[in-house]
Length: 212
Image (cartoon, rainbow, N blue to C red):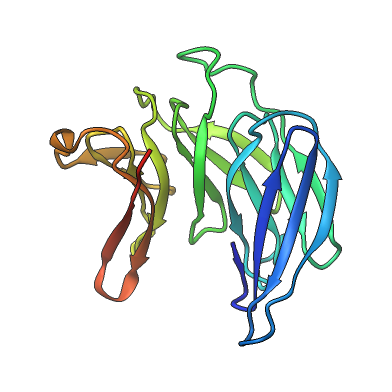
């Protein structure tokens, strides 16, 4: 993730250890990479994707939040203090499909300051409050496996989820928790896209091609 346009953070999560490497990308010839946070965190394939809050955010300025994949907690990295902590206590299993891996994949920071985790194998969205340090599933049931990988926030505040094996684009409204789908992409098969960006000035969404 890019931090305030000056540095890039790379998260490396192994079975027993988390390391965060900071790469200085302010200019040519100034590209140092070093480990600045190292923490012992048990588990495997714990988080998938991260969201950084603005340094101007109230209650959670300039923090990096890891989106739970198999972890039952949210990861919080404080670059200024060089610390890594976790919070939350998610259920061990999905309420609809039971025990499943890779529940959420990527997330976006909404205009209201909440972080929305994107359902990959989970049957609901995940809402993270960076200020209150709370986390909980949200929204009506969404069926399917390997559904969406990442999302983009549009100019109107809605979250558009990037279809992986899903055959439709998923749109989520953070204000009321409602969602709907549109499009018919079934002819393109599985593993279509992974991640996306929004060009707010022209209300355009661009998805990144994904290959197995």
